[in-house]
Length: 223
Ligand SMILES: [Zn+2]
Image (tube, rainbow, N blue to C red):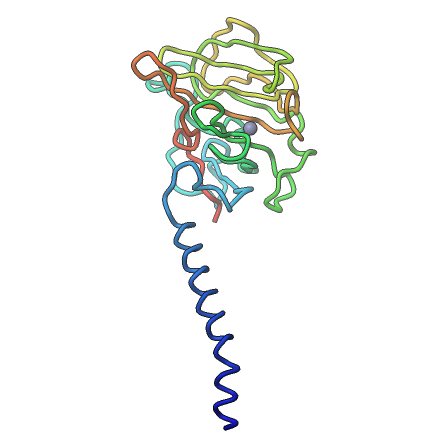
């Protein structure tokens, strides 16, 4: 009698355990799906490393270091981290939050983690230099909304957008090469703190298609 009583009390607990494990399994399975727009979700702020910044950093993954500047064969194509710092963190991924829908606003938000705790911090981010990721012609738009102080770099096949800048170091019509300084990080326009909103667009059959900047960079999760 007492054994039967104990068993009947345990049954709801076992039922709850099975349901919980089921939910956990579903959650883990969803997290592992290779969905491009959300693949960095849940990891934010993701700590990223960049071979452009320092070849002496032991934490870097094996990523080929591209040559910089004019004359590079593929310099029309965006490549690399516009902040050029191993302390770069991504504070909002592609196609999520205010970056949705991706075909209109697709971007990544980047800032600096100067203390190494995995979080962006304003003191390290304010006025951090921002560099062109490819060759092109500059269009500068001051005080726009929502992009604030904004730079486009455009060529026949690609354009990249750099939003919320504090200052410009380029002007309208200027020709820049990959690696040229274009401005400094700020929080102008629709922005809650200093960061860079970075967009990549590719011209396909005459139409500009928004692309995930992470597909044009050596960004990797730090070990
Ligand atoms: Zn953004």
